[in-house]
Image (cartoon, rainbow over all chains, first blue to last red; front, side, top):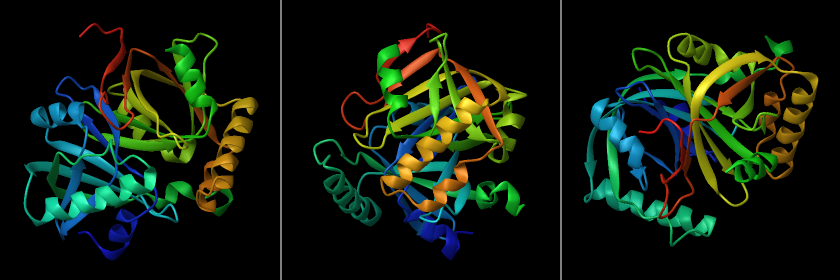
Length: 137
Length: 150
């Protein structure tokens, strides 16, 4: 399910947007520093300050992840929250990468990995066609 | 809050608009142009028509949206929530959108971003009900404004 093109986009320059929805139908939109490939059907997202996102996921575990690659190749991942890991190899690798991102952004004191949230990927849809100019269509 | 939001949307920023339908199916769309309405309790977001299919479908069932806006120079960010309405963008808004896209490309963002300079642009009016601080760090998620009272 997570093909080479999606994995390339996961390494893109744009932050990833995650949208969750409360049981009352109120959406929440926030950005994440990194998406970590776990295996063909699972990803991990960095939990830094995801307070409302976490509340929403406890009531409705489904979320939408919008990923933009460097060339704006765009993917929507429908994902389902499974668990949070605060130790182990995935957590360790994500913490190292987050430190590198924070250093690049000059925000070492602000980026702390609280957990690696593990999600099952339910569906992947490419949305790159949105970016075509009208005359190309 | 009005001054803070006006400052944020007047500089180079990236925004993401999230919606969800009655079944909780979500959508996300990127934007880099917005302005405060003359009535400052509304923010007007500019997004190309082609990207809006899912948003249109969702707000037919649930018109409440959430937009996060991030200053690309300082990473200062806020999230705004409220009901959404649509109208076609006017020429002034199309011009502003083109300028904002060019600014980002000049700052080093990919040239492919220029495809956001769509002539078929929609103005989405978000009536501000909730505002949250989203800048990374302690205080992220803090409520700045909540007119819903929950």
